[in-house]
Image 1 (tube, rainbow, N blue to C red):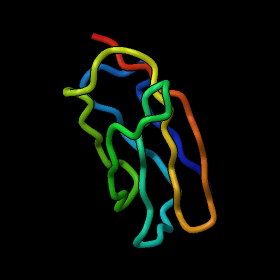
Image 2 (tube, rainbow, N blue to C red):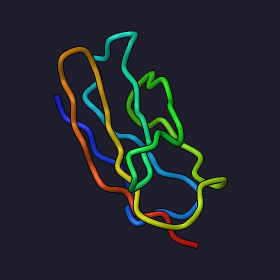
Image 3 (spheres, helix red, strand yellow):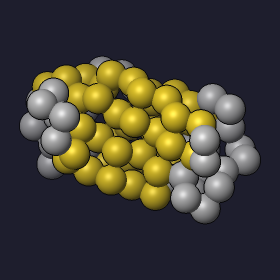
Image 4 (cartoon, rainbow, N blue to C red):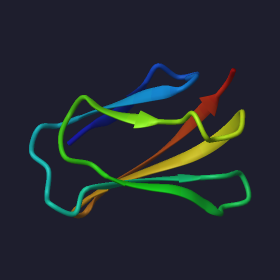
Length: 79
C-alpha cells in the first residue's frame, strides 16, 4: 500500500494518490498542529481531489487510514 498528496505545498486543492485497492472505510483526516481534527474525508480511489480552500494557511498533519494501513504526512497550505 502507498499514499501521497500532491501538490505539497498546496493552495486550494490537493490530490490523493493511493494504491488502487481500498477498503470501504478508507479515510483521510487533516489535523492542525495542536492535534485537533479539522477535516475528515472518505477516500474512494486514487486521484481524489480534496478541497483545501476553507483551511487557513499553515502546516497540517494528514493521516490516511485504509484497514490496518496508516500513513501520517505533513501538508503545507499556502495562498
